[in-house]
Image (cartoon, rainbow, N blue to C red; front, side, top):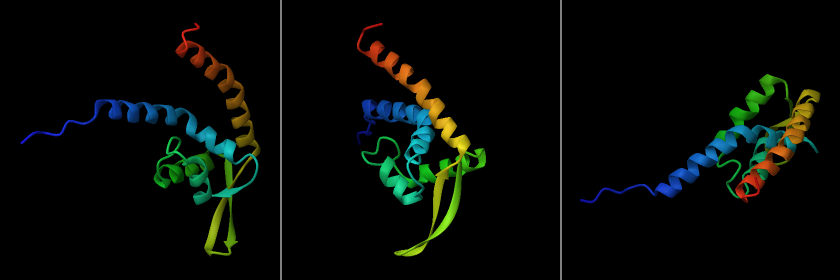
Length: 121
């Protein structure tokens, strides 16, 4: 019987995506909360669109808990017209500063990576 070999390109793509998420996902989440508070499933839909930023809610909730412990988000329970109450997450002033700082650092970093990938460095 022939052993099934994993698709090497798919494994490499998955590992690369994991590394990229690790450094940026929390700031993408904070940026999503800049405009208005949101609850977990709503955030999962926003960030999980093409499966690039998050691939499951199992990634989201531990991250939200970590951001809460760090003091970057706060929560409040609100009644829902469609079931049980929902926990809404919103940015704290420290969370707002964190995403602003990330934005300042990200723009030149992303531009440098793009120049490098396009062979312009």
